[in-house]
Amino acid sequence: QVQLVESGGDLVQPGGSLRLSCVASGDISQINFMGWYRQALGKQRELVASLTTGGTTTYGDSVQGRFTISRDNAKNSAYLQMNSLNFEDTAVYYCNAIVRRLSTNAWGDYWGQGTRVTVSS
Image 1: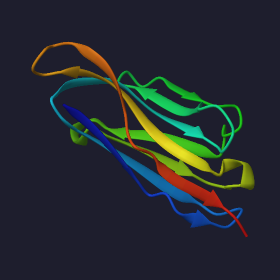
Image 2 (image 1 turned 135 degrees about the horizontal axis):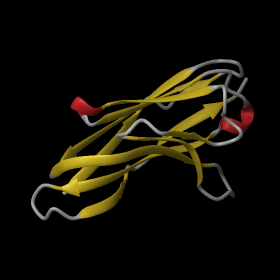
Image 3 (image 1 turned 90 degrees about the vertical axis):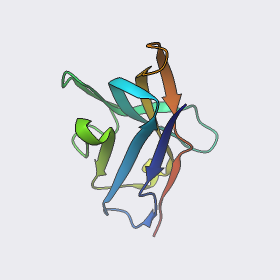
Image 4 (image 1 turned 60 degrees about the horizontal axis):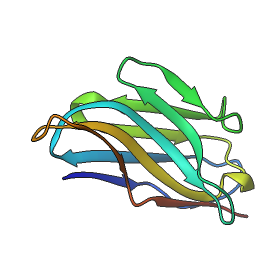
């Protein structure tokens, strides 16, 4: 089993900042990719940011320049620093990871349960 646990979601005012964390644990041999997605009410899930082990980053157009993804490979963790938050950033944020399992050597796609970010005045 592989578990992803997110934390850091909160209620924040427009213009504020939050830092989300994601920790992967369990039957892990290697993590190739970690990313953040979000889903707002009534909308499809969308990519926010991703970071490969090799250091390649990708950002969604709406967060470019405001959000920063980082990883701590030793801790199997990923972080999302979110600055200049606005109402459109309100969503449930999900952590995603591509993980090779120690027990089977097989790669799999894993998701956390999500953490809610609400931007409101």
